[in-house]
Length: 635
Image 1 (cartoon, rainbow, N blue to C red):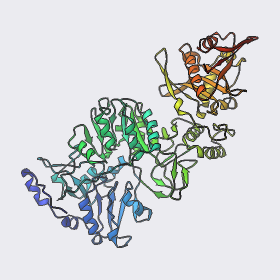
Image 2: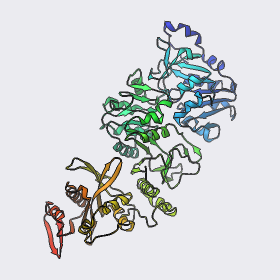
Image 3: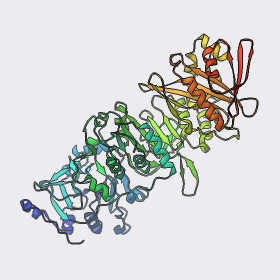
Image 4: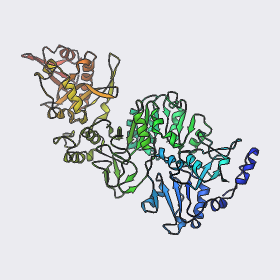
């Protein structure tokens, strides 16, 4: 190890007696059979850890605890193939331990991140020695835990002995992030670089998912981003937001970008106004420079940052986390690949529940719709049932939003049938029919349940590009979008809202019921030939379809028939005219040349809309009490 030039302040000379060599730090403070904790993530005390590995053969039956190990150090190389020389126990599985846990040489303890400190504070798990990394002490004798406070501070406060690696390259972070030299039994001086961490560049799939997630994040929201490429990619899609806040167990460099662009201000936070709250960070030197002595950033132990009660006090708390697989009913697996443990529970449950209890909060789980196995086989991550051995990290009762590159599924408060349709809609199209067959077999959906099928026999893909918004004359904003299979109930409700006269004007007969067999064809359309556009209004968390406009392929090529329905409380606001113009735009893109339709003579509002459409009618005739019209879209 290179010689260090760290000199303690004169006021702290009394602590020089605690300065020991690396050999002494391990030999004199760790005994065979001890349980020791090694500081986590990017704050791992590299020099102490290397010496521990070097002396490992002298320390049989030592149990080593980690939260997340990110270094490339291999603890087992010096064990000489002795499987039971010592044992690792991880609360979250990092890359250096994954293969050893899979081989049965290390252990995994699944726990909510918020509850790990209690395990040690209560004495249920005794800790002999904590190996930690700190910033140099200030003139009062306080060292900062730096970029990692999470469980290390509570464990250091509970351990029998604390051995510190004091490193001037460790940032001095603020908040509940300090330990006094009095509480350190021994220290070594180091000057190695702090571990840096980076996510791979966002690919097309993670970018699409991130855009969907960003659409769910409103201005003045407080955000949490879990560990993973997709949560990290979301930060790149938030540049148009305003006054965001951060309350998260971890964040990376993307948050720095948002602060520098003025997107994150924390000025609208409900608690800890003006402050970014976190427990640890993982990133580059730029990130570490940002948090160094920065009053805007407060670090706290994870039994505070991850307490769902604390999290829920943030209005509009958004939690964005990554899953490995999700079943059709909304059960989320995030920590294992079948029987193979892969990562850990971490803070997902804490933040999903905290955001779920927050006023206007949004708990979001993300995942790509497929995965590629080692042999090249592509499998769906949206599955009929979780693979045997997979852990349910987020339960059906906790799930709200699930996002893939194919869209957003909202499951909270939905029946199993509704959930199945939502999940199939965001699965990869190649797997949707198989998922539906499983759902039918288990009676989760109607026996005749269909998916949108195009004219070529393939799944008809939802045309996201046609989603837009309309501001009404009364100032309200409605979402305009193509219909989806899961809209069946809302379409039924729209039609049942029509009185007898409305039904007569729309269907030329007072239709009495709108059962599944009648409505399903309206929500499982071929988007390449037909189009139904709905107007959706959200109020107090409830979504309602208040209008629809449609065209359907007619008996002649390039000819389509029009139809409209608007809820009686939403008429006179320009919705039908807007839908007509939008359908004309879409019709042109789908190579239609003519729109046609039939209107009862007494339906004067609809006649007025057609006559004032701006398109010359090339057909208008009256048969009995019905006006038949057609106009040319090519004008």
